[in-house]
Amino acid sequence: MLFIGIAYFKKNSESKHAALRSAFTEHLMQPLNPRIKLAGAILDDAGARSGIFMLLETDTIEMARAYLEASPYQISGLYQSADVNTLELEVGHL
Image (cartoon, rainbow, N blue to C red; front, top):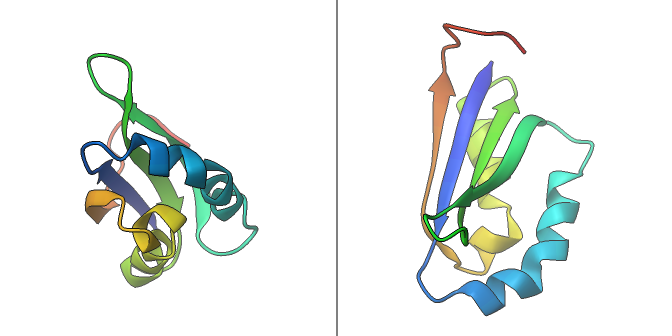
């Protein structure tokens, strides 16, 4: 199944975010379940990173949520909000 993970950073967390970027990249590169189909930064109107988007493939939404919860950004309290939802693909293909 496909799941979308979207997390937005708290305001004024840029320095802490930058310090954890390597740890977050390692988290993304884990060869474990769930499989990451897409991932990238969400940019605000000024081009600054304001969040993270992930398209995950795994068996259950609980597994996708656990993956997002294990993010170094989440553990460090950088997310203002973080959500995982099921994606029902209607147009396009992966």
